Image 1 (cartoon, rainbow, N blue to C red):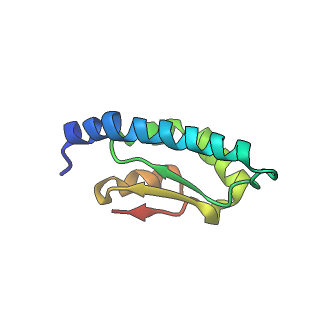
Image 2: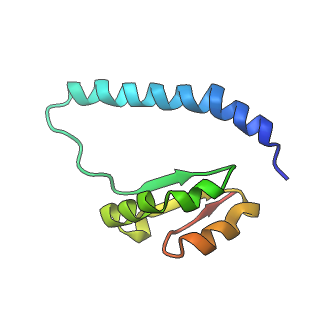
Amino acid sequence: MTNVNALRWLDRWIGMPACWFLTAWRRLTDLARRAPNGPPRSIVFIKLIEQGSTVLASAALRRAIERVGKENVYFLVFEENRFILARSSRSVSELTY
């Protein structure tokens, strides 16, 4: 079983700042490049806790599949949450931990 409070702490104090930093870094490096990057080749959804929101994100999943193809859309989930993906997104590849 997963310690949910520890994961929430990591998400808030590590995940959010990391996302902010990486987004700022990408925007700064995009300004320095002459040619923009092409469209994304693959998309990873990271869902370690609260898998119920995966069902609510079905529109985002469909859009990701339309954009990069179902063979290039991945999920990173814990093994105990894998069954939710099997029910909600049969066409999405999975990465499990």
